[in-house]
Amino acid sequence: MRRLDAVRRRLSDLQLDGVMVTTAENIRYLSGFTGSLGYLLIGQETAEIVGDSRYWIQMEEEAAAFTLVRAGASQGLFALLVDRLKALQWRRTGLEAQNLTVDQYERLGGGLGDGALLVPTRGMVEELRIVKTRDEVALLRTVAGIAGRAFDRVRQAIRPGIRERDVAFLLEQTFRELGADGPSFETIVAAGERGALPHGRASDRVIDSGDLVVVDFGARAGGYNSDTTRTIVVGTPTPEQERVIEAVRRAQQESMALMRPGVTADAIDRRARETLAGEVHAFGHGLGHGIGLMVHERPFLSASDQTILQAGMVITNEPGIYIPGWGGVRLEEMVLITESGPEVITPASSEVGLA
Ligand code: GLY
Ligand code: MN
Ligand code: MN
Image 1 (cartoon, helix red, strand yellow):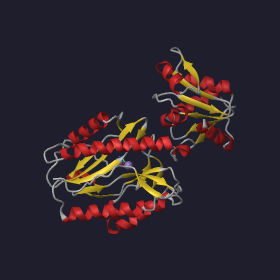
Image 2 (cartoon, helix red, strand yellow):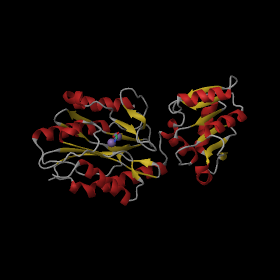
Image 3 (cartoon, rainbow, N blue to C red):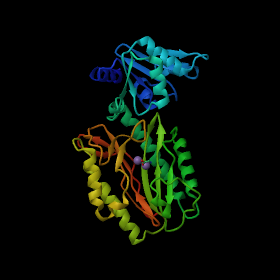
Image 4 (cartoon, rainbow, N blue to C red):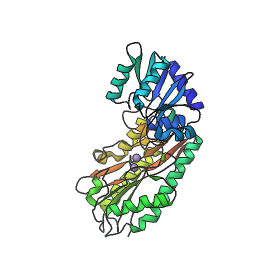
């Protein structure tokens, strides 16, 4: 269990006796358990999974390397967790600061008493998830491929008269037909002036001739997510539409060329903004994000992230220009960082000028 070994090394570094893992994606990553609720307790000699009866069989099947601690009907799951932690007698117990509620924190503190110290940790498991294994990359290619094929099937339907929400429905239906478990997030379809909403939810708006349509979609399978954005012109693009699309495309190309080992995340974001030059005020969000078990995970291509890129990371590149009252353009690819540079793993499709 290389992943558990890595956690145990971090426990030694941080002088922790153990850590309680509560983030569902981290639990899945470390144990294989895919249910919606459960807790992992990991110490140098400990690998336990605490769960309620809905999940006992599934936990035994999926998390075979972990000792299953069962909560009975008469005892709440969290109360059992406190009991287990008491029995383990850890003096310094790591918590996932980004995930535990204040209520849980207070209940743990009250239950364990003064001798036990609760130590917030940040990103302990997320740091491991940042570089993908070969199997994870294969899954990401699979989901990106499904989403790309679904888009190719559905794009002919993006014509005057169809509603945004119908396009979203067709895409999500096609993901499933092609073998996905479902969408990675609520599919975004934002036509005309609604394209100025970077995360415009697909609405009843009817798509019209001349609209720019931003379509942002992802498929999910085996726990892994994809994330792609295409911007379509319904009809023949106007010179202004062409100019904005070209500006976004250039920002993507220039910044993507930097997506190689050794470059810091913030430098890539900065390059996209430099390329956008006079339009940069219309680009409010970060350039991209890591993707895997979560749609948004480390590293973040933004001014505040100095992570040095390494081979094996998978990161989106998604510049956009959003103009209130006019619309928007965003182009988004998933990029695998390799020793020899960026490799786009989202399938190509030509976005512009759909009649
Ligand atoms: N679809 C969400 C994003 O692009 O980050
Ligand atoms: Mn997206
Ligand atoms: Mn994205």
